Image (cartoon, rainbow, N blue to C red; front, side):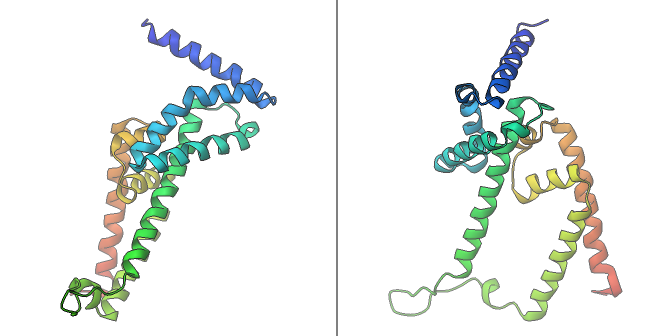
Length: 209
């Protein structure tokens, strides 16, 4: 047996001792747990958000959430895995908020003028799409959303993390604790299910024929 296995067992045993004390109200024990995992939490948040400021805030929010729910933690998973999942959830919420804010900013961006006082050119797709095409896109988006909602939880999770949030397989493995082959398999099945939903949407009522 390698030296890493006993060291890992010792670390988890120390985590359990600190956790028991922290759940009993020992603040110094919780601070010790924070000291053990804050660098890992910060690293995960930084990889997911690519922002040092966001990563710092996520780290703070993660341990605040962990402290507030400390007595609810039953130890089904390792403490490190638990705080990693909390950190990933906070990071995902931050990424989604960032995308919504960016989309809103782009939508509300005021017209720009050239030095000669004429309107700057805008992409044709921003202004020329008619109501029917927009309605069709809205219906398709709803069909995809409904199909995603029907996916089993594990499939929906990897689809959202990979195709919506844009995480790498390595990042998803850190969040879920699953192997990369398992993640790829579930993602493939999720994509097949969504592709079938899209095909049904375009073929219903002989649309497009």
